[in-house]
Length: 259
Picture 1 (cartoon, one colour):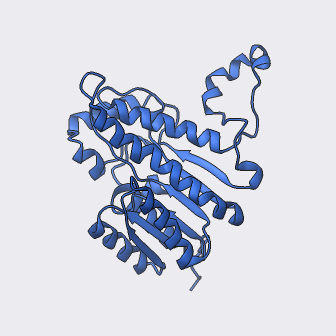
Picture 2: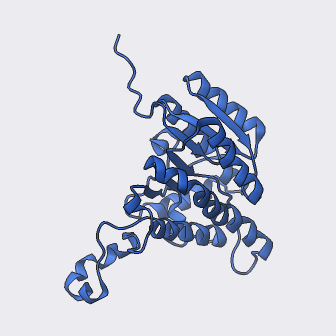
Picture 3: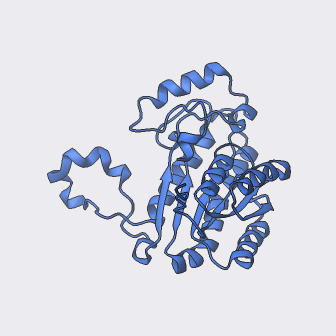
């Protein structure tokens, strides 16, 4: 019988938001590929379910219940990971919150909640993990959304947070080629793609750390259900997503997205 291919054998991966949805499915996929995992999320029960599933695939799992809005909890998460494994190869910034609201009815408290989880926590955790990822020549994967690429009605702050996450990704990474402003006239056919070019003053590419974002379309998870999205709203979102260049799209299950 042929042995299983384990491309991530002995690699250490930290996945946030792993108690449900895309984060849980990502952890399970990584476990099947041989990774050693740190899983974190706010739901202890959800983390236990994910950890059990990962362990059934033979993965070593460190499960850390934490609220990433708490800076001390973020510091402890990294410290526990390094104490357990001694290295870090991949950071998956997946944790996020989703709430509905427009400019007319979104309170500042909601703005702070969303931005603190979807952006500030990502900033802090990435900052703390970078020294370890430089040593391992590792990878950062930020889970963004099609909401960061175009406007959706009724989810203002969420859209802002994902657009900011996309640009954070660009600026922490480094483009392989950048069109200088003086060359725009000769490269007008490339202008629609400029938003996909990462910033030229990024930090990590010369240190052999890859930084990327993935932008799923509408993925049916508890996150959206808790925000009160109806089936009709899913259909409307899917219609908007179809006009975006190469979204991952509407996924009836999570496996294609995590792959």
